[in-house]
Figure 1 (tube, rainbow, N blue to C red):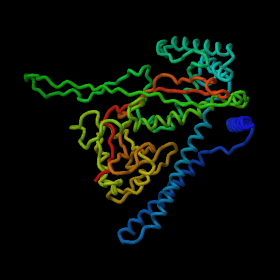
Figure 2 (tube, rainbow, N blue to C red):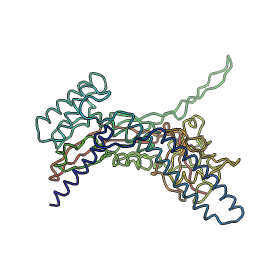
Figure 3 (cartoon, rainbow, N blue to C red):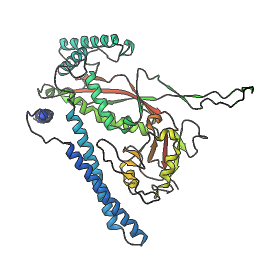
Figure 4 (cartoon, one colour):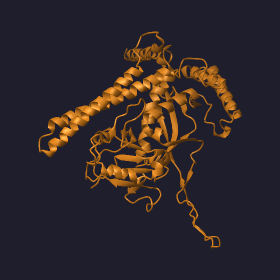
Length: 462
């Protein structure tokens, strides 16, 4: 009885997911879709709230100067902070939903998808036929033949080399490469989940034996007259950058009965179930990964030092101190120093990276003229700015504490390298736990600091 109840609950959940997916076509329900007007209202609310925030903070500063209590003002600021965060999240969600609604869904049922080759369509449909009924040898054979046909086509088009193809054409105990349309959907979700995937250099590689060479010296020269001796100048120095790799994986499962449900959308379920486990793990590794079976995060390499680019060894990041033993700066000077510690060539594409708590504190910062340095965004799809540079929130950044490094500033495209090994893979397992089908989805990814001159850190220290 308990098993029957569980199965019914799962099927009910799948039915709900199906009705949500089909709502856009008006089949089961009519939902109110966000419009540009609603995003405009969110932006207006953010701007209004920030103006109130500035007035309240100015009153708090005056109260401190007069030696008066600021308890009420602190509470009001905390509430506005909470409201601002909520409105920013609402704005981001509205933008994401609008983008999704304006774009044809990746999973619109059977048939050719936009940009798909005929062979990709045939493989995708054969793959999911096999996923639903893995004991059908004819469907398994059809999926294998479709995969071989797709591989041949991609080789003919020069899209891949046969020796680096990632499909494994075995039975249910082995695996098949995920169809291209599903693989791209998981990776696109990853861009939303990790700011580092938006900011860093991302390369798709065919092997973990991958490295890049960084010119860290440059060629010297000399001025000479017409008959002067031409002395030998220094030779530029190349430094190899080699990312460390690991395998991010997720293992969602469903009951055998639910796979037989007509309303069960296998494609969407695989994406929704796998994305958080893999992409959240990636996001954390790009910042704090120790390099053992995972990417090496930019905060996990050689301990940062205070020396500048001219005297610091390549491979080590530089920090600027906050001026406070256990707190963020109370004035703009350390932020300004952090900005100009970065060479001009990197400042043009620089961004701030920190946690929500850090940015809440930075909203209060003024320059010497009394101007607030935080600028809420007024353009849809654009992040807020601090001192003119975009702000990206990542809760994997450290909390504020003595000797912590809670804030990074730099050109992360120059500063950090993410490497994706070609192909997501999935293995279907209905053996190890009778009554349940497990999907083992995995992706090999690497990461390493690329150019240590392109990223600067704020260290909490006096």
